[in-house]
Length: 388
Image (tube, rainbow, N blue to C red; front, side):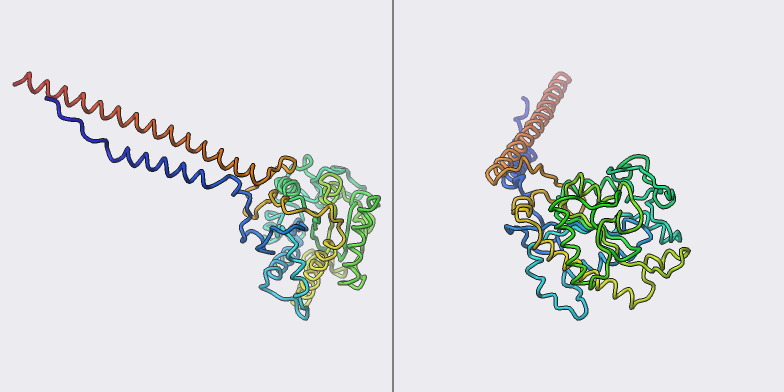
């Protein structure tokens, strides 16, 4: 007589429990959770969900030889996270301002270019592929002036041919800042568009930008910095720049270029000294002065920008974390809380169906193995009886 069938294997029961547990986890973990910003993501405030938000993007180290710019980024982050103070300055008055800011910082945009400088090519401003990243954007790209120097201003094979420029362009779309500051060294100046022509934009937006820069210049530099368009004030025209793209194409309300240091007495053969302070006293003075300039910029920008251009609470769905994964949301298709719950429910149902299919497949395989074992046992019993 064939042996009686054994009870269902414990594995099957464990698979059932696992499927139900995973499905339940999917149901109680809505997709909308991806929209929440961890407190550790931003160095400014742990409370990001307030009605009025002013979004600032800052890029440092676009040119490899301008090492001082990345040092400024680090110091500014220390100040914003209250790990460092500015000598002789009471920062308590800025606490309320910081509550209304969302800040993104790229401390070294041109990492491979910086490595080339640190390896001894101290005059090089290009990236690792020999392209000037501040000539690789699409507005008036590729145009060359009479004094064009390919070693200094190689624009690349096409607009956004360089990965660094592509990343920054993507950030401009995702983060949608009100202010974008591209930080350089070589002189002391506060620039607004345009770089590719000797003029500034027309209309009220241009007046607002100039007003902000002039106030920063007056309050922090005693009117000692150059203020105006890059193309009009710096002495040469630059084509395919970040600032011009951000204003004309990305529609950033206030894109600026800050030039934070320059030694006019330095020899043209001494690029390091020309673009970077070489003694501690000067270094500290530059860092403190420009950290203060950024704090004033935050205050001036928040006060100057019209209310209808400052984002409300919901626009923070369009957040780009510092870690690199882009959670880009289409602002025209934003959904409310109910839609978020429905998305979570939909995700949970999809997960439930998936795990149910896996459970059915596992059950089928187990039944197949069980039936095969019974068949073999019956066949073996028949053979034994016939032999006897």
